[in-house]
Length: 358
Image (cartoon, rainbow, N blue to C red; front, side, top):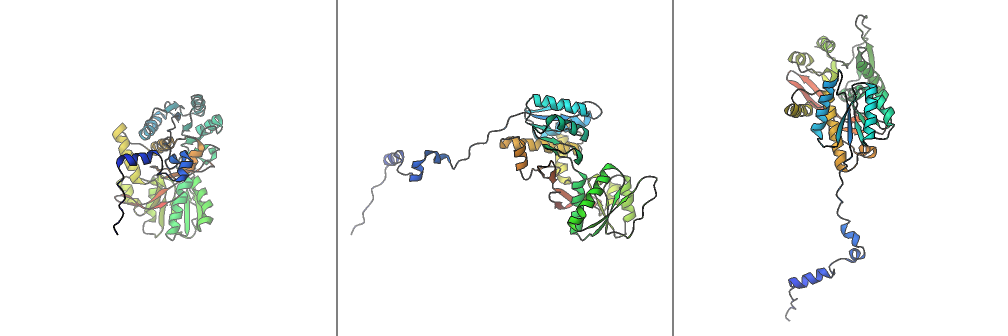
């Protein structure tokens, strides 16, 4: 028996078949809109203006200019407008009013706690504010503190120390606002991570307090010669020196003294890449505040490309890639930040771990 040969399907017959829609499943024939269901609509870029509130005049004008240049290095779109605060609360309030009149969808800045409080009073939560202050006192609804806080770095370094077997830490509070806040943060986290913390307040001209039994580690939240002097005294004692981003010192003599210290800070390699790009474009050496401004510009660009610059969109992202540590915004106005744990050595600072969500 000869096999039955199926006639070849000619091109014109195939076209007729396609035109008659006989090749489509019934489900697709029933609802033409289903044809487009598998294709994502292109997200429309949010082109609304964003305001930068920076001290472009007054004693901090150089800082404001470097931060403005850093923001534009991350997002050079025409929708970003700089407003001068003059570095004062009154100037920041006026700048915020002008930004709202211009229909700004988001505000980046200002720098100080006093300016941030003034801006919050003007904005009243109408648009999100990414402020560069690190003072939790001025944190409020819709105002996010993007500065690197003593709490973030203290939590990060103590968690790492605990993971390495440290159980007893003395925190040296030199009475500066940063050290005082770090000592307070250490006291709050000790029960959570199972570490004993003793805070010693050391003030110039005052007798040294009794240190008690030797701890496993000493945390010096501050910077400068006091930290280096303590590092020299701890050499050979078996007590581990802990520090924060404040203590980063790249001078060869300082690196030699800090050799072996554990510090919490943004990743030096990521910051170095940003600094190199900044120098190539603008010249000069950017500081941490410029890096924060660069990161804020990157966040604005991310949200703009995703189609929304509102607070819900800001909170929805679980991790923004940042030079100062990948960040996540919380509804209470705080920011969770990934920080690097680095070990000081004669050649620099080597990252050995990442502290998540400090």
